[in-house]
Length: 297
Length: 339
Image (cartoon, rainbow over all chains, first blue to last red):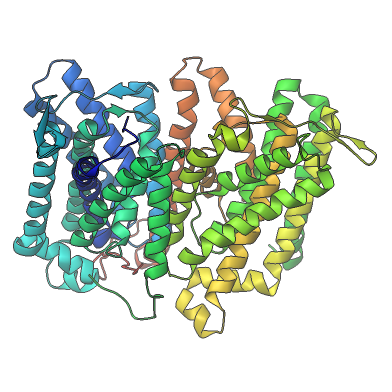
C-alpha cells in the first residue's frame, strides 16, 4: 500500500491521517470518560457500540436514507440505548463495587456483539463516503476529503462536550456527582438524572463515533469491536480515565502511533495493536503508584 | 446447617461431581463425550477465573489467551522439530503462561483498580493478531497438530483414558486451589478483595499478593490449554480469541464466581452450551452467536439481581412484614470508589 521509498511527504501524509484516526479514538475515549466520571463504570462495550453505530449507518445508507437523516437516526438510537442501559443497569448498580460495574459492562459487550453479528452477519462491509470519496492534495500531502470532515466534526464535538461540562447546569451537576455523589444529592442534584444522562451521552457518542470510523477504516468488520475498544480505553488512561482533555490527547497520540507503526513495520502482523499495547504499558509504568488519597475529578 | 454438615458439604459435592463425571463415558455418545471433556478442561480454566476474579477481585480478560499460550507452546515443543516428551513440554507450557502473566501484570497490578482489565484486553488482542494468527510463529494456517503420546502406563490416544486423565487433573487442581484458599496467600487474597486499604493496613503486601494470584491463575489457564491441545489434537487461533475470555468470565460470574463449585458449573456451561445451542438453532448466524447473547443477558441478570437482593436485605426489616414499607433513609447515590 505504502511505497518502500518513503519520503517526507509520505510521513507528512501519515501525520495527517494519524490525526484523523486519532480524533475518532479520542472522541470514543471521551465517551468512556463521560460515563466513567459520574458512574465509575469503565465501559468496555464502547468499541462494540461503535461497531453497532458503523453498521447501522451503513445499513441505513444502503437503503438510500439521506446522509444527514441517517446520522441523526444512528445518534438517536445511541441515545435510546444509553438511556436504557442507564435505567436498567447503571442505576440499579450504582452502589456496586467498581469490579461489579466493570463486569456488567462486559455483559453489555457480549449482548451488543452477538446482536451485531446476528443482525448484520459476520461479513465485513465497506463504508460509504461521508461527503465525497475524492481526495485533496496540498503541498504533496494527499488527504481524503472525508478525513477532513471527520476531523472537523470530532473537533466540534470535543469542544461542545467541554462546554457542556464546564458551563451548563447539567455539566455542573455531572461534575458534582463525579466529585461526591452523596454530597451532590444533598445539595439537590438529581443523581439519577445525571447517571442516566451520562450513559445516554456516552453511548450516543459511541454510536456517532462509529459513523466517523467508517470513512477512516473503510471496511467495517464485526471483530473490529474489541480492537477499537482497546484504542478508546488506552486513550483514556492518559488522563487517568477522569479527564476529557486527556482522553482526546491520548486518542491523538494513539492515532499517530498506529499510523507510523503501520508505516515503519508494514510486514509485522498486528503492528497497530502492538503499538497500542506498548503505549498502554508505558502509560501505566509512568503513572505514580496510587496512594491512599482519594482522587476526585 | 451444623458446622459438621457445612464442613462436609464441599467434599461431598466434589465427590458427587466426580462420580457423575466418571460415569459419563459409559452413558454418552462420542459427540457428547467431547462436550463433557471440554467441560472438564474449561472447568480448569474457570478455576483460574475464580482465583483471580472471584477471590482476588481483579478482572483479567486474558484467561483464554493464557490457555492459547499453553496450547501453542505445547504444540511447538512436541512437534517433531523439537520433539520434547509431554512430561517436559507440559510444565514448560504452563511456565510460559505464568511468566507472561508476570510480565504484563506488573505494570497494571502495582496500581490500584481496574487497569488489569485494560492491559489484559490489550494482551489478548496482541497475542491473537501477532502470534496466534501469525503463520510464521504458529507454522500453519489450519493449526498445529498435536499427537497424543503414551504416558507411562497410560495410552492417551484412547478417548476414555484421556477423559479420565482430564478428570484426574481437574480434581487435583480443585484440591490444590482449595488448599491455597485456606493458606495464608488465600486469606491475603480475600482481604485484598474486601478492601485494598484495609489489607495494606493489616500488613498485606498488595503487589506481591496480586502478582502471585495472577500468575497462579495464568498457570492454571496454561494447564487448561495443554489439556485442550491434547484433547483436540490440533491447535488453531479461533478458540482463543479475546471474546472467549469475556465469555468465560461471564459464565463464572453467572455460576457464582467465589467457589470451586462455580468453576465446575461454568466449565459445564462452556463445554455444553455452544454445541447444544448450535444443534438447536441450525441458522448459521444465530446459532453460533446465541451463546454470547445468552451469556451476556444471564450475566446482567445475575449481577443486577444480586445487587437488588443486597439492597432488599438492608431494607426489609424496616417495614411491617410481609409488606415492607419503602423508606428512603438517605438519598440513593453511588458508592463512588476511585480507580
